[in-house]
Amino acid sequence: MPLIQPLLDGVYPTVARGEGIFLYDTEGKRYLDGCSGAVTTGLGHALPEIVRAMTEQAERVSFSYRLQFRNEPADELAALLEDLAPGDIRWTFFVNSGSEATETAQKMAVQYWTESGRPEKNVVLSRNLSYHGITLGALSLSGHAARRRLFEPLLARNAVVTPPHCYRCPLDKTYPGCDLACADDLERHIERLGDDRVAGFMVEPVIGAAGGAIVPPAGYFARIREICDRHDVLLIADEVMTAMGRTGRMFAMEHWDVEPDLIAVGKGISAGYAPLAAALASDRLVQTIRKGSGVIMSGHTYSGNPLSCAVGLAVMRYVLSHHLVERAAAAEAGMRERLEALQRRHPMIGDVRGLGMMWGLELVADRSTRTPFPAAAQRAARVKEAAQDLGLLVYPALSGADDRPGDAIIVAPPLTTTDAELDLLCDLLDQALEAVEKDS
Ligand SMILES: Cc1ncc(COP(=O)(O)O)c(C=O)c1O
Image (tube, rainbow, N blue to C red; front, side, top):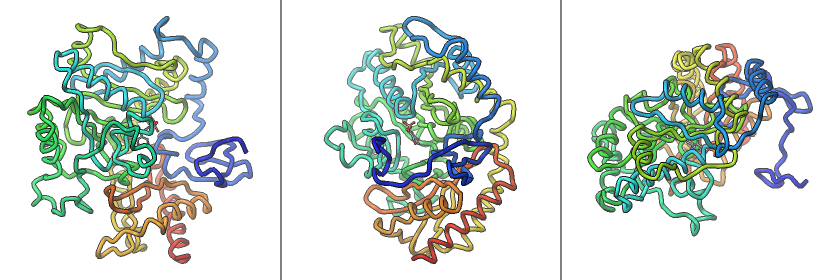
């Protein structure tokens, strides 16, 4: 078995094909893709429009090197993103994964300050409940203890800022009486370091893998923007999981009318049809570098690859022409209703939270005290396995701050999912939760 699997000795079915929101394994078993893989396949599988665009591009040219040529799909997709992106965000740097997108954004922030004559502004802050990617630069900013632990000696930074986790407030406060103390914690850290040192602050609009779809309270991001402005700190939104419609807005930060200086996107931009991600940057930032060195110091062999960009362009055109962002917004109430109905049936669901078509269920041993399951109970993993046995895919996530155990699962089906398919999803999830409860 020379292939290194996630669990080296794990047993995984072999995928044979996908159709709509379903995947089929080589034994013919069907799986409802209740979490879009890793919150990625927002359009479902094997859409003829995307396959056609991919084939047509492959027949013309699959690869050209960015130091030798520009290519039309990359130019057209960047122009489309310029139209869609909020505020002053205009420029796109294509990469291949979300981790590369957050790292590129981090580097662009530091380069911007260096080229503005302030090279000592080179620290990027982040929250201690977050996931920004698995490569070393991205992991450095991630508040995800399990993924960091082995590599701490290689990581440049610690994720230190308090997250807005109202269900288990790390500051033991309650909203709104807390007056957004978690947002003010950013200012405390900036002042501790000195704002002449801090280049940027990276945040997920909705905390995904490390939190199970944690949505910040009203006013949180407005306060964060104010703090960043007061201290000349760039706001970097990691929208790798949330962007391109998942939360019912093209970019999740639009929910709070807050404009970041840099945005990392991934997953939804090519909906799993090709590896593609990007760092999007404000005009102010890029013009400063343009007048300085004239070079964004980053890039990969496959950056702006014509085949991936043609796929991304076809995906984004499909998202727009099928009004999938509006569809995700319209699905929000129904998803909440269905998941809260499940919560009433299953005491282990402590909290239901989310936006659009990105939802988290926090799993607890005791709902009245919000006591998490011990890590050894592997609750999220067991629900994921029971669901998969029944033909449903859900995404296991964490739900607590670094020093606390906690389980959550993410439910985030393709944005194309119909009401009948949502009913089927919840019915299968109901059965999976029941199976785990009976077995405990
Ligand atoms: C918010 C966020 N940022 C970054 C990443 C890293 O993306 P990738 O796995 O494509 O490197 C992820 C992946 O789950 C993510 O959810």
